[in-house]
Amino acid sequence: MRRKISVIIPAYNEEENIPLIAERLFTLFEKHPTYEPEVIFMNDGSRDESLEVLKALSEKYMNLYYIDFSRNFGHQNALRAGYDHATGDAVICLDADMQHPPEMIFELIKKWENGFEVVLCKRKDNSEHVGRFKKASSNNFYRTLSFLTDINIEPSTADFRLIDRKLVDIIKSLPEKDIFFRGMIAWMGFKQTVVEYEQQARIHGETKYSFKKMMSLAFTGLTSFSVKPLHTAIYLGLSISCLSILYIPYAVVSYLNGSAISGWASLIVTVSFFGGLQLLILGVIGLYLGKLFMQSKHRPEYIVRETNIQS
Ligand code: UDP
Ligand code: MG
Image 1 (cartoon, rainbow, N blue to C red):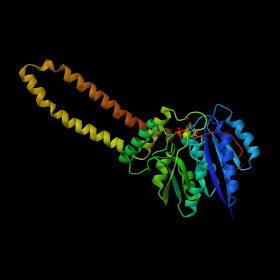
Image 2 (cartoon, protein in one colour; image 1 turned 90 degrees about the vertical axis):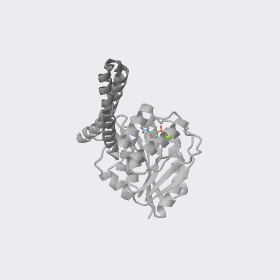
Image 3 (tube, protein in one colour; image 1 turned 90 degrees about the horizontal axis):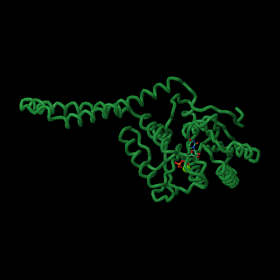
Image 4 (cartoon, rainbow, N blue to C red; image 1 turned 60 degrees about the horizontal axis):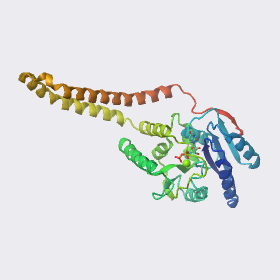
């Protein structure tokens, strides 16, 4: 029996890239007729002609599907939609911009055939087409994340991976909103392996990950897997209270010396320091509270305007 491979591709303003990646993928699958392809594009509220391009392509390729969102819901939610709709025995996610070389997918499939349920792709460190800022920020982020949480995400892996149907079914059944997939898949376990790849240049357009989106992904990652930031706040508060006790003798001595008023500078420093610290800790608590609030509303993570997938 032919095994079915789903390829899910989030696309946000990628009208120029979509036809290229679709053609490349279907040509590749023609060379591997033992696998049945299913290519699903999630059109994440693109403001360009992506949808029209996808509609035209779906006439040309029988196994090309699109899910059009009512607005931009973000990359991770687009992935969620892909997992929700994919019917393959294995599901691979790719970027629409060809930064993840499509040729790699048969390498992933080979690993999967050898019994691995998760195959992660790790960007080679010497990959040319990764900005220095991106490399440094991603490395620091993973270090912080593994310090703050008990999950270890393989550094330099992004959302380019193959997962088995078993994991897809579990993801579908998770009630959790705002999933950080890299972390979730590391957390799920199963037999995992890593393959290396050379990151390519984005062929058209610019990165769709604005600084704001990157920060929001980082916060989602940090708060999804751990309440350690809250504990850190407690420890920080505690140690500062202890330190400030040491301040009391100084205050008493100054009072006795009659030079109490001269402490203005140290006073203002302390006040602003604690003001900042309190705001920071309140912010951390606020992040978790916000998460609970959003989760409690049970809103869908994405809204489909139209699709050519028949359910
Ligand atoms: N993307 C998306 N919604 C967004 C931002 C990005 O669907 O809000 C898609 C984008 O079209 C691409 C993938 O997610 O296929 C990864 O984005 P990008 O290549 O811009 O990120 P980078 O590779 O620069 O990290
Ligand atoms: Mg990219």
